[in-house]
Image (tube, rainbow, N blue to C red; front, side, top):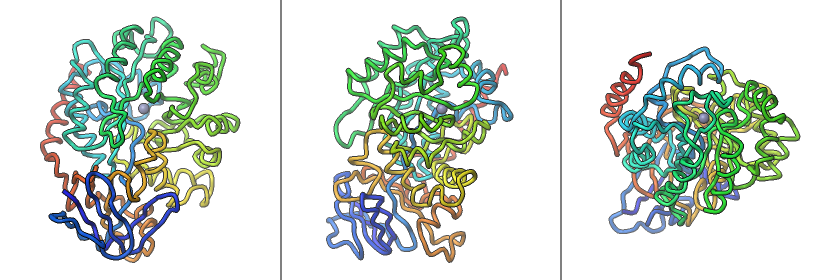
Length: 450
Ligand SMILES: [Zn+2]
């Protein structure tokens, strides 16, 4: 069914950064058919009409880093550093199974939808032998909630006995990992335009994965035409680990394994020096900036302005909900905006740049910027419509400033490929109470034995 929205402000975030004070959007066959000022020049027969008065339309937000299963382990290790937090949580995570991941993924994806997200990645890296097919569970959850989904097949092969951080019982063998990665590409990766599911390969981090697995994963990804993702330069502890074990700083280590390039995006990148920031830009390597998680773990904050100046793609990520209990993406837009200014002053990042991080820059990280992250004829009809008519926004003239600096309210309508996931402020693809009850039940199961 076609959808027509009229009477709204529109921030297209297109190449010209066109903004329209009072305009229309027409979505048909999964794509934007028309966008411009005034009422729609043509309304397709039987189209769904949405009254956009008092609202702002933006491209749907893109979430570049997540661990959905962590929705079932929120509130743990509240004063811990990353390594302390991981050591506390690995034994809990060792107990996950398909029921836990199903409830967590549905609740997490619903939270993202309510915060304007239309495309999400997920980095899943714990595959206990008893747990069932966890990748299949989360792909099914994304289909049910209705979001575009880029699952990343994660992996850990460097257990404690080999000098890594995770306990041996939750790491896998290298050969088994590589064949599981290959099978996941066969099963889920859709390279076609308009894809709802695309896979990436994502060994977890330098302190939980061998150099051999990193290098072989990069070879496999490039042979198969899928993207690469991992965590990097998140904390000082990681830097110390890399210097001690490899004699290299984290980015230098990754570079030596052939891991930098425009088919790679990295979560965090908090601890980069100036030369490393330039290297990110020169190689076109993307960053998933996760400001709330970095704040929760006291890790520091990524040099976003320098990365953008260097030309590196910088998207936003909520990160797993065990280090960001909120898990909503509009909050990351806000956090990125204000935290960039804490050290860089009030010109470090603008409201419009923050919106770009959440949309077109995120799409660039995922290699989807040809058809996602902007609103123009031919782009996918992934649209967030924000209700700025609520009292909390009263009197703010600039709608983009209202969105970025005003109350972080739930989205009014959310379309993915033109299909409604949220309408009139309500999730239409699942019942939030049922999701919450399922999540509470599985979270209680996870606490047993703690
Ligand atoms: Zn993460």
